[in-house]
Image: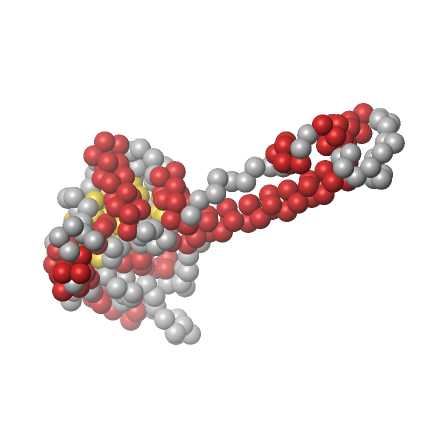
Length: 296
């Protein structure tokens, strides 16, 4: 499904015209001006899977943020919006293949990291609550006959919850008591599993998604699983993706159109022609004998 067909950035000439007309002189940077024009990138022709490839400072994240803001896509975390960002957006325009669905969104590395930190904070809170409940058990159970609850009686309906806990402490083991009253931890996963789950939870049917370096926090195995998930989302579920990445596992997505932002000027290339991919290929070819015929 093609929602975004083309996106146009201001070229160098339009940027020069803006700067000559701009009277503000108290700023050290005109970002995002000069970033993409410096790569000779004035337009993106989109496919079902479009990839922006390049190293740090190549402009791939800038392009994603510009497109996301111009299309008013959903996002979970804020980004560094410069004083001239709005001016730059006014010089951009786009062509749609069909209306962009409301559930479309941009997903960044910051979104994934914040999600994992929130999970950790929730689990820490649950663990603290569990410690308190363990202390309650020791105080209430018959294992501590001298406790203050030895002759405790129900005085009002407000004491009902205490009565329930007291009876449970006297008839259950410590582990069963804690499981009964402690909130369960959010499902414990590795960082890679949590990151992968974030993508599969946020990406739904029939929408446009912009992904900024989704390989961060993902092992090679998880990256291949994510690549398969993205391919299936395009083929069967009406999704379109624009991805900024330098992961060979994602660059190898079937049918992906890849813009090499490390080239001068930026140009469309096959994934096997990209510098990072060639570096991996050359490295493993040099060490091929170390793997042996049986992969050991």
